[in-house]
Image 1 (cartoon, rainbow, N blue to C red):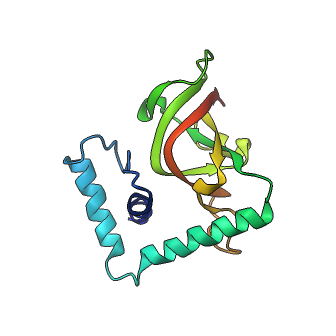
Image 2 (cartoon, one colour):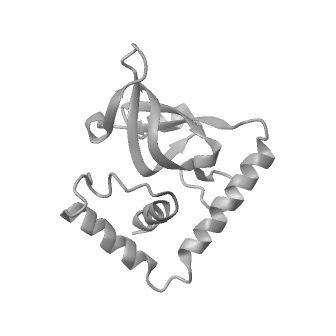
Length: 165
Protein backbone atom coordinates (compact mmCIF):
# COMPACT_ATOMS: atom_id res chain seq x y z
CA UNK A 1 0.00 0.00 0.00
CA UNK A 2 2.77 2.44 0.89
CA UNK A 3 4.33 2.03 -2.54
CA UNK A 4 1.00 2.70 -4.22
CA UNK A 5 0.54 5.88 -2.19
CA UNK A 6 4.03 7.12 -3.12
CA UNK A 7 3.49 6.27 -6.79
CA UNK A 8 0.15 8.06 -6.60
CA UNK A 9 1.89 11.17 -5.29
CA UNK A 10 4.31 11.05 -8.23
CA UNK A 11 1.38 10.59 -10.61
CA UNK A 12 -0.52 13.55 -9.15
CA UNK A 13 2.48 15.91 -9.03
CA UNK A 14 4.47 14.93 -12.13
CA UNK A 15 1.94 13.13 -14.33
CA UNK A 16 3.99 9.92 -14.46
CA UNK A 17 1.79 6.84 -14.49
CA UNK A 18 3.04 3.74 -12.71
CA UNK A 19 4.44 1.05 -14.99
CA UNK A 20 4.63 -1.66 -12.35
CA UNK A 21 2.84 -2.40 -9.09
CA UNK A 22 2.77 -6.07 -8.13
CA UNK A 23 2.89 -6.75 -11.86
CA UNK A 24 3.32 -4.84 -15.12
CA UNK A 25 0.77 -2.10 -15.78
CA UNK A 26 0.24 -1.69 -19.51
CA UNK A 27 -3.56 -1.49 -19.70
CA UNK A 28 -4.94 1.38 -17.64
CA UNK A 29 -8.38 -0.21 -17.60
CA UNK A 30 -7.03 -3.63 -16.60
CA UNK A 31 -6.84 -5.48 -13.30
CA UNK A 32 -3.22 -4.51 -12.45
CA UNK A 33 -4.01 -0.79 -12.64
CA UNK A 34 -7.27 -1.25 -10.70
CA UNK A 35 -5.33 -3.10 -7.99
CA UNK A 36 -2.87 -0.19 -7.81
CA UNK A 37 -5.77 2.32 -7.55
CA UNK A 38 -7.41 0.30 -4.77
CA UNK A 39 -4.18 0.17 -2.78
CA UNK A 40 -3.52 3.85 -3.39
CA UNK A 41 -6.95 4.96 -2.22
CA UNK A 42 -6.90 2.57 0.74
CA UNK A 43 -3.51 3.92 1.77
CA UNK A 44 -4.65 7.53 1.57
CA UNK A 45 -7.89 7.05 3.48
CA UNK A 46 -7.87 8.91 6.80
CA UNK A 47 -4.16 9.83 6.65
CA UNK A 48 -4.18 13.54 7.49
CA UNK A 49 -3.11 15.07 4.18
CA UNK A 50 -0.42 12.50 3.46
CA UNK A 51 0.23 13.87 -0.05
CA UNK A 52 0.91 17.33 1.41
CA UNK A 53 3.43 15.68 3.72
CA UNK A 54 5.14 14.16 0.65
CA UNK A 55 5.23 17.66 -0.87
CA UNK A 56 7.10 18.80 2.22
CA UNK A 57 9.47 15.80 2.08
CA UNK A 58 10.26 16.53 -1.58
CA UNK A 59 10.85 20.24 -0.87
CA UNK A 60 13.10 19.41 2.10
CA UNK A 61 15.03 16.88 0.01
CA UNK A 62 15.62 19.44 -2.76
CA UNK A 63 16.81 21.98 -0.20
CA UNK A 64 19.20 19.50 1.43
CA UNK A 65 20.59 18.26 -1.89
CA UNK A 66 21.38 21.85 -2.89
CA UNK A 67 22.86 22.60 0.53
CA UNK A 68 24.99 19.45 0.88
CA UNK A 69 26.08 19.11 -2.77
CA UNK A 70 25.72 22.61 -4.29
CA UNK A 71 27.82 21.77 -7.37
CA UNK A 72 26.07 18.48 -8.21
CA UNK A 73 23.09 18.66 -10.54
CA UNK A 74 23.11 14.87 -11.10
CA UNK A 75 24.06 11.77 -9.12
CA UNK A 76 25.27 8.39 -10.31
CA UNK A 77 23.00 5.79 -8.73
CA UNK A 78 22.64 2.01 -9.01
CA UNK A 79 19.77 -0.46 -8.94
CA UNK A 80 20.04 -4.24 -8.81
CA UNK A 81 17.44 -6.20 -10.75
CA UNK A 82 16.92 -9.83 -11.73
CA UNK A 83 14.66 -9.64 -14.77
CA UNK A 84 15.60 -7.28 -17.58
CA UNK A 85 12.44 -8.26 -19.47
CA UNK A 86 10.35 -6.66 -16.71
CA UNK A 87 11.61 -3.23 -17.82
CA UNK A 88 10.46 -1.28 -20.84
CA UNK A 89 13.32 -0.69 -23.21
CA UNK A 90 12.80 2.13 -25.71
CA UNK A 91 16.06 1.75 -27.64
CA UNK A 92 19.80 2.07 -27.35
CA UNK A 93 21.63 5.25 -26.39
CA UNK A 94 24.83 4.52 -28.32
CA UNK A 95 26.33 1.77 -30.42
CA UNK A 96 27.14 0.02 -27.15
CA UNK A 97 24.26 -2.40 -26.38
CA UNK A 98 24.89 -1.98 -22.65
CA UNK A 99 23.65 1.63 -22.91
CA UNK A 100 19.89 1.65 -23.25
CA UNK A 101 17.01 4.08 -23.10
CA UNK A 102 14.48 2.76 -20.61
CA UNK A 103 11.15 3.84 -19.22
CA UNK A 104 11.40 3.38 -15.46
CA UNK A 105 8.50 3.05 -13.05
CA UNK A 106 7.04 6.25 -11.62
CA UNK A 107 9.06 5.77 -8.43
CA UNK A 108 12.21 3.66 -8.05
CA UNK A 109 14.64 2.71 -5.35
CA UNK A 110 18.35 3.26 -6.07
CA UNK A 111 21.55 3.39 -4.05
CA UNK A 112 24.83 5.27 -4.40
CA UNK A 113 26.78 2.08 -3.68
CA UNK A 114 27.19 -0.38 -6.56
CA UNK A 115 28.06 -3.16 -4.10
CA UNK A 116 24.76 -2.59 -2.29
CA UNK A 117 22.85 -2.81 -5.59
CA UNK A 118 24.50 -6.18 -6.28
CA UNK A 119 22.59 -7.59 -3.30
CA UNK A 120 19.29 -7.07 -5.15
CA UNK A 121 19.91 -8.61 -8.55
CA UNK A 122 22.12 -10.10 -11.21
CA UNK A 123 21.89 -7.03 -13.45
CA UNK A 124 23.01 -3.61 -12.27
CA UNK A 125 21.46 -0.47 -13.71
CA UNK A 126 23.73 2.57 -13.55
CA UNK A 127 21.83 5.81 -14.03
CA UNK A 128 22.75 9.48 -13.98
CA UNK A 129 19.81 10.92 -12.03
CA UNK A 130 19.01 14.64 -11.94
CA UNK A 131 18.93 15.93 -8.38
CA UNK A 132 15.48 17.38 -9.12
CA UNK A 133 14.11 13.83 -9.54
CA UNK A 134 15.10 12.73 -6.03
CA UNK A 135 12.22 12.40 -3.55
CA UNK A 136 14.38 11.29 -0.62
CA UNK A 137 17.84 9.96 0.12
CA UNK A 138 19.58 8.03 2.85
CA UNK A 139 20.47 10.41 5.67
CA UNK A 140 17.86 13.05 4.78
CA UNK A 141 15.93 12.49 8.01
CA UNK A 142 18.21 11.17 10.76
CA UNK A 143 16.88 7.89 12.11
CA UNK A 144 14.20 7.65 9.38
CA UNK A 145 14.12 6.33 5.80
CA UNK A 146 17.14 4.16 6.48
CA UNK A 147 16.21 1.07 4.45
CA UNK A 148 19.11 -0.08 2.31
CA UNK A 149 20.82 3.32 2.05
CA UNK A 150 18.33 4.06 -0.68
CA UNK A 151 17.35 7.00 -2.80
CA UNK A 152 13.72 7.39 -3.88
CA UNK A 153 13.92 8.44 -7.53
CA UNK A 154 11.09 9.75 -9.68
CA UNK A 155 10.92 7.71 -12.85
CA UNK A 156 10.42 8.39 -16.52
CA UNK A 157 12.81 7.97 -19.44
CA UNK A 158 16.47 7.45 -18.53
CA UNK A 159 19.68 6.47 -20.23
CA UNK A 160 20.83 3.35 -18.40
CA UNK A 161 24.12 1.46 -18.43
CA UNK A 162 23.45 -2.23 -17.76
CA UNK A 163 26.07 -4.60 -16.43
CA UNK A 164 26.17 -8.03 -14.83
CA UNK A 165 27.05 -8.39 -11.18
